[in-house]
Amino acid sequence: MRRYGKHTDEDDIRQRPNPKGNRPRTSIRPKHEDAAEGFVLTVDRGRLTCLVEGRSVHAMKARELGRKAAVVGDRVWIVGDLSGKKDTLARIVRIEERKSVLRRTADDDDPYERVVVANADQLAIVTALADPEPRPRMIDRCLVAAYDAGLEPLLVLTKSDLTSADKILEIYSTFGLKYVVTNREELAAGDAADRVREHLNGRITAFVGHSGVGKTTLVNSLVAEGRQRATGVVNAVTGRGRHTTTSALALPLPGGEGWVIDTPGVRSFGLHHVDPSRVILAFPELVPGTEGCPRACSHDEQECALDKWVEDGHADPARLYSLRRLLQTRERREGD
Image (cartoon, rainbow, N blue to C red; front, side, top):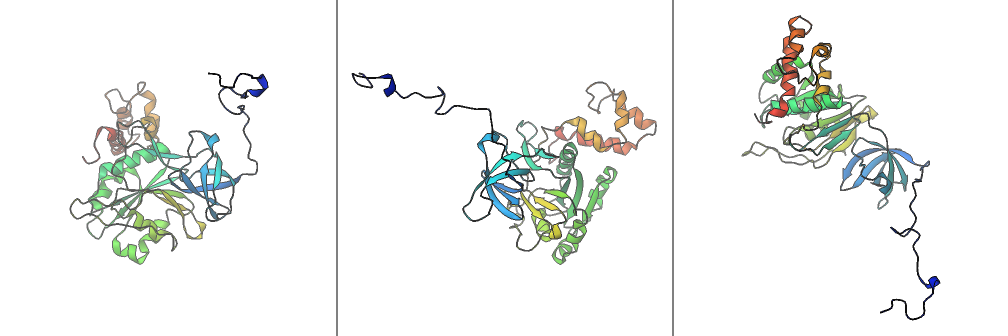
């Protein structure tokens, strides 16, 4: 059966300019010189809310970016309708190079990295002293992720009205961490927020912690009214909190003095992605001692030169113990 009938002519046949598509392909991409700079506030199922010249603009990633995805904290360039009006949608056409990237994996055997936030310079690790019980291994893992990403850690201990913070502070006394201890009465009165805010001004701080530790409650006390997020309670049977924060959200501190990024509560913090050689950078007094280490030294073996370095008095033995404790976190379950 003839498709074009008995009498056909070459001019009657439709020809495509590109055998693989309807239009010719080109490597030339638009420069988008008229694009406006934005800051990603949150991501929800492929739609991004960005701050552009003081307005919240809804946008989606341009196809030309390929697999590259923008995350909370990214500096991006946007074109299209930037009015921020309802039912408008702009396009993100470029993503600036990131200064830092905080990552985690689902567990230590999962090779798939999940970017938590970009461009933060501080990680606030929020842990309750009771209800739910503190998990030092979780703190260790967050510290490893912070050091690997080049972020300065801040330990925030909540619910000190239920039990003393001395035990936890003793565990981390050799780490040289900045810390803040709060209780529920101070949190309600606003005193806790004032003390925490002293460490946040002028910085982009990501808040992490497992569910029920009071992370979002603390964030709500730090930001202006009208920007608060929903909070939950700890389950009396399981001792675990309920997930009320389902996506990361960047919120400005009053007066434009910095940003806090509230992240969803996590039950685990996998470290499959971590480069152990970066963790030691958080212990600068130990770094020179690694010059005598064998190639690919794990810093936890008999041939490690750090033992001799410490014996010669160049560093506190407790600091070497702390380093090795962090390096061993991938070999231990968070609940151990």
